[in-house]
Length: 130
Image (cartoon, rainbow, N blue to C red; front, side, top):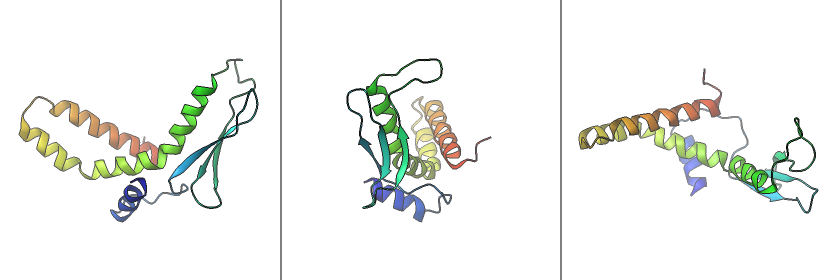
């Protein structure tokens, strides 16, 4: 599961991260036209990660539907799990590269592009992207 991926990523020597360890979850306190959505860790104390405020004016006066805010909160909550999975995939990049190259089925460039995207996302999350 997600906990195993995170543990394996750390054990594999992934970059030391200073973020709150996952997994994280969404707490929906939005009802009617008030409230907020919180992202917290899954510990007994539910350490606060961030809040998403679906109500009120934003710059430019545009309002997003509540479903969009919930989707954003779920994506934020999935971040540690996604990063752990990406790190595992990145660690397998050479094996994947070799297997696809040897298969000679025309997918090599697509796989190479995807592996580069994974590496770029990891760098962004770790604050090491240019």
